[in-house]
Image (tube, rainbow, N blue to C red; front, side, top):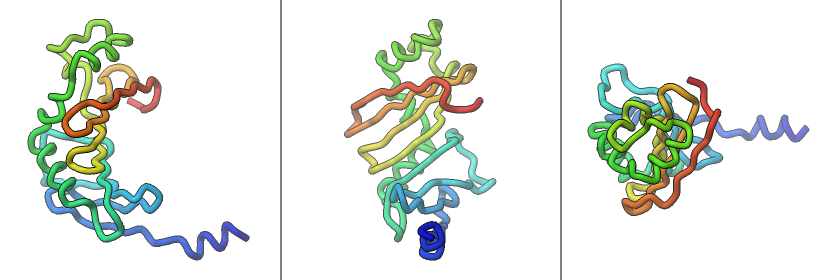
Amino acid sequence: MFGLIKKIFRKSPIEIIIRGVGKATFNFEEKAWELNERPEDLTNGLDLNFCCIYGDEQGPNQKSVQALIRYINAPDLLWKYIDNRFQKKAAEDIPEITMNNFKEHFYIYSLTLSSPNEFEVGFHARNIDIFIELFIVNGLISNIEKDIGCCTL
């Protein structure tokens, strides 16, 4: 019975087009907009597998949208967060990785923006199933997490 009531009162998905970014759907549980489709004419250096921007039912945080557009147009702004802590964590599974060749071994997989100053950027290894996520607060890495076997190549 509870399942039937839940279905009846479930909110319909909200979809919007974010100019310069693509189509997004509001995730009611997370209170965030998940990017689920990009316009075919949008060419950029950032091909994300997952992107999320926090906001409310009215729309995503506009300052975060502007930050996302900045990262789409200049993905090196995200790569600059790679440091020796990332290299050390990656070297546990990819011993040949160095600070000079990390782009050969990883690509930017995901980006979640709580705000322009607080976000998570995920890097996935190109040849093995390793995902390393950097948590950025005010331009500094606050945490690094690694998952092995979390994604499919």
